Image (cartoon, rainbow, N blue to C red):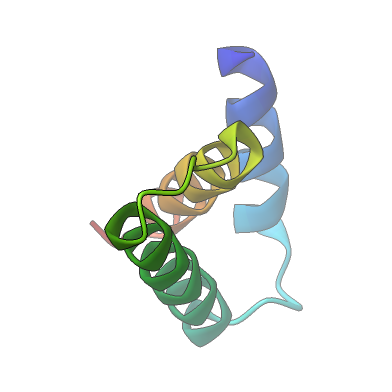
Length: 65
């Protein structure tokens, strides 16, 4: 699964149709939703955590930390 995350993150980071703002907004939306679900004591879907890792890696590959 880790290689899958890295491969998807690499493809997204290289896709110039996506702006840095797109990455920031997607990560912010995921973080807000995970925070809300956590506050409501709801289970957090693994797919959400997976996408958060992908977006973080993609942003990092573009030079953001």
